[in-house]
Amino acid sequence: MTTIPVLRVKKGCAFDRIAPGGFRMLAALDTATKVLGCDLTLTAGTNDHTTGRHPDGEAFDLSVQTLTPAQIVRLVAFLRQTLGERFTVLYETPAQPSDTQLAAVAFVNHDATAPHLHLQVKRSTLYPPEESSAYV
Image (cartoon, rainbow, N blue to C red; front, side, top):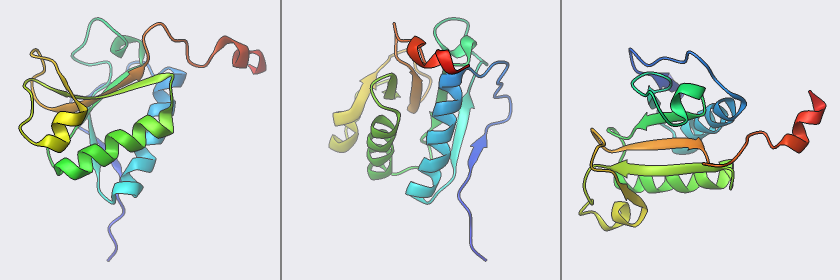
């Protein structure tokens, strides 16, 4: 039996709203499951956040608990390349990692509850750009 890697959602993770940028990130994450050959799990959509891009459906958090350092680095690089300059992809961690691979991509946030990936539409950026909304 062949295992098909999929994008999963942790119990309690909510998506009260998904903006166009949110759909773009979900598509990239779904493709990332195939690139890495393993399941990925979203832990936060609109839940657990009252500020920033999460409540607007423009940010997600992704668990990295089951990934190796090499897989995390590969995932960060893949998502940054796939999503492009209008998005931010951070390996967010409460303390500086001792692993040199992870330290190279880490964004230390002392308020983070655990290491995870944070994806969002970049600050001060509109997605999609206004010029593409003419097709709606």
